Structure formats: structure tokens, C-alpha cells
Image (cartoon, rainbow, N blue to C red; front, side, top):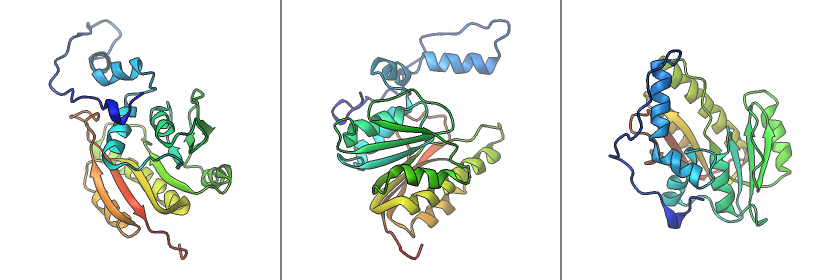
Length: 236
């Protein structure tokens, strides 16, 4: 599994090795997606290391640099399926060993993973945050992760606004459950509105920054907002 001692090398610059034929019934977009998957070294590495998705390398790279996943921590992973981020979190907080814990939430099903407590919930349901808090059983939460993404419409600004809305919902929830000093990591898209989101975060966290791990494709508008050093206010 991806670890700090086995950081994935920079794979940029590798040329495509597999070409997918044009066939009847396969659209150009699906052909390009399949071709990209077949030639993506992160996809191959994830399969070889038993990781659920290439996204696992994104979290591993971010944590390699900022070190917010530590043994004994309790982590809530929102939008967890298929489980790549949860696998990295389990490894680094030592959940299997009984030190830390990982609570994973997704509206879709997820195969059981060692050390992960999974619950099938739609985070946007009104009663979901309360259910998650109940499942935590009073345990203090050190890290909230959100790799949630809305279904793409193909309209850039609409997709941007949708994912920012998801991040804002995840942030509101994180402010309810994070212990002082806690960390919040959330996926966003470039588009301008995320600057306002950062300003809101700066009121509650000591440091806030954008990060883009090497495992994120160069042509992707995907970014992550990392907020560390949560300052809890009882007036909230």
C-alpha cells in the first residue's frame, strides 16, 4: 500500500502505450476515457498495490507533505466509495491495529475494508449529519476528508458551483465535529468561487491552502483545499 517510504515517482511525460480502437457503439468520449485509464500508471499502480482507486495516491501525496494523518486519530471520510482514501487513512492512523479509527460515508455501497467502519448514507440528507455524529459515539475527530463530487453536467460553471456547494456542506459539518487543531481536506474545482471559500475557512483554521498532488491529472480542474489547525468556538 502507498506509504511515505514508497512515494510514487513523477510519472509525467510518459507517452500512451495502448490505443483503443474505434468500434461501433462506442462513443469517442468513452474510447478516450478507456484509453486514458489503460495508459494511466497510477491506475496500474493502484491495482498492483491492492488500492481501490488511483485517488489513494492523491491523499498519500498530500499527507506525505503535510502529515495530518497520525496514529491514533479518528478520521471521517465523506464520499468514500470505492474506498481509496479510506485505505490510506486506515494505514496511517493504524486503525487495523486498534489505535485510530476511520468512519466512511457514501450514498453508494462499498466493499468491506479492514479497519473501516462504513455506513451507506447520503450526506446531503437532512438527518445524515446527526446520524454520523451518533455513530462516532462521542469520539473526538481529528480529520474530516471529503472527496465528494456532484454528477458532471458538462457545463463548467455549473459543475464548479455544485462541487463548491458540496464542500461548503462538508465544511459546516467539519466545524461541528472537529477537535481543536483538527484538519479538513476537501475537493473543489478551479473557477473563482473557491477563493471565497478559503476566506471563510481562514476564520476557523490556522492555515488554509490549495494543493494539487501529482496524482491529479494535469488536464483536470480538480484542486483540494487543505485547512489545518482548527480553532473551535463554543459559540458556534
